[in-house]
Image (cartoon, rainbow, N blue to C red):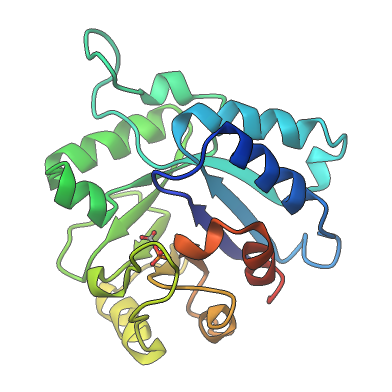
Length: 226
Ligand code: PGA
């Protein structure tokens, strides 16, 4: 099973989201549905809309698509204006990205805050996709998904950048000494031209796709390359 995760970051409005999902769902998922798990992580306001549009196809259970969030609050609930908590998201999403380098950089998220988010996600039955920038970033206990994203490999939104050579990605997996049950995901300028290069490696369990996931055709090419 390979996990193909779309991270839309701070992009798209409601009409663009409707167009994206309309086009994406026109594709055939039968050949690949037992080999992949697609996880779409839109901005918060579009989570429910995506879920609804997938259910309205009438064959949601046979589609290999789940919804995730790009972040959640480090607080459980209460007087935290503007925060979106794990409790709020519970029942709406299956996965959440935690610790993306853009959050560490622009919002000063530190290990303590990230571990608190991790615990709250788990408590609310949301599986964290925990991002690290290198082998030095600490990993929480009970981790199931490690997303390795070297900062220099992340594109400026185009999906085209300095993607990391496969040997280096595999070396990081070795250094981390992950249990076999842990899924190891690579992210950083993955696109429809290089996705196979990573996904063919048995040690890589999936890819996190930013820029190239914004276009439904490009994203379908990535998910169908397995
Ligand atoms: P990118 O983004 O695919 O545009 O490099 C990946 C990410 O930061 O999640």
